[in-house]
Amino acid sequence: MHKLIIHGGKKLNGTINISGAKNSAVALIPGAILCDESITLTNVPNISDVDSLEEMLLFLNAKIDRRKNGEILISSENIENKRIDENLVKKLRASYYFMGALLGKYKHVEMCFPGGCTIGARPIDIHLKGFKKLGATIKEDGDNFIIDAKELKGTKIYLDFASVGATINLMYAAVKAEGETIIENAAKEPEIVNVATYLNNMGAKITGAGTKTIKIKGVKYLHSCFHEVIPDRIETGTYEIIAAAIGEKITIKNIIPEHVEALNEKLTEMGVDITIKEDKVVIKESKNLNSVSIKTEVYPGFPTDLQQVLASLMVIAEGTSTIQETIYENRFLNLYELMKMGAKIKISGDTATITGPTKLKGTEVNATDLRAGAGLVIAALIANGKTVINNADYILRGYENIVEKLKSIGADIELV
Ligand code: EPZ
Image 1: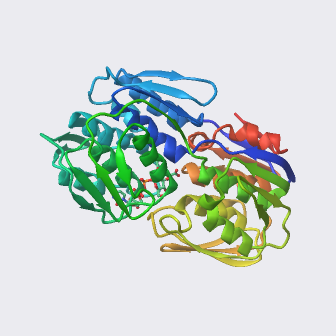
Image 2: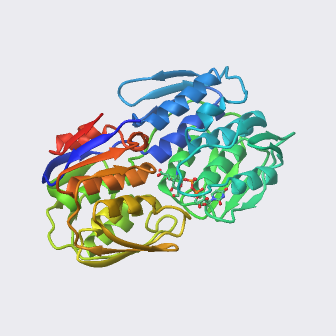
């Protein structure tokens, strides 16, 4: 595992270009299986989760051409629908998109339970319930699933929770089913819209993506398409928080501002000097930040993925801030690492309180998951002295060129 070594306390200046969204790319890549021809994706971030999915597609004998400019061409005309090596599947949660894609195309898939961060149990019961509603039978033996369907028939599916993964996986399973499928209580995240547009670009008939009701009219054939990955709203939010914490003047480009509206509201409430433009934000040095309270919600509420990052900014705000995490049951592990750096934090149940301002001290800390790691990067950039972040590979899973991007605005950071 790599480590990040950061010497903090240096003001940062310059421009950050946001990459394609991890949580979109990791859905679009397996979705290529559904196409009856080849597809080209552009603005694909160069992150290890994409490498892992590429390995899984190659395991199935798909043909892949990964170009330097963030383009990837995938043709899955001759793939073999076999059980993917579980060492590959266990590398990330998004492996489960192969379930929906292989089921949707071949009416059969055999796979083990996916991987994923330590932020909660992360069951896939909502996915499986939806597959059954479409006509699939599921045999579970231990960690392994065998999912079969004589035919997939469109039907009405109500999601018990507006799950991002389940919404996308059920779109994949339904896109070539007989008749119309209606997904009620669907997730509304921008990544859902990005996936629906992708499938429609192939000739699918999907309406309502981005609302709580998505309609999918099954089609027989999906033709080739050229599709762009949307900008990463969580990477955007991460760099906005870095700028608010230790920037003098930082411009963050290639963004879709409304995708980070919930965060921008909170940063404004904290007194951050933020100017929002068409496809960028400019954040200037902001002194005496106010404390703030957040409660994570499904989109368009405050994103759970950014609460671990904003926690580090709350440490230097005046007063007591609170975080209520409603999506995951174990997403406060990063706070124990912040306490090692001197942060004053109390955790009780689903709520954490952070009292500031506190001067953080550099020390050795451990990234426990991807966004926890991102939060520690911010804490290290703020802290006096040297911080070593262990398990930095978590961070490389979701942030393209994070060391180069931070060095380009003056951070003293290196990966070892
Ligand atoms: C996606 O995970 C993201 N990952 C997560 O980002 C993000 O935190 C999450 O959406 C919520 O926004 C990817 O897109 C690869 P969910 P996903 O299904 O699809 C429960 C990151 O840092 N649930 O909306 O797994 C689940 O346990 C990652 O980039 C069930 O109970 O999220 C969780 O408590 C972390 N049964 C809640 O719903 C199910 O069948 C949210 O899960 C499915 C989910």
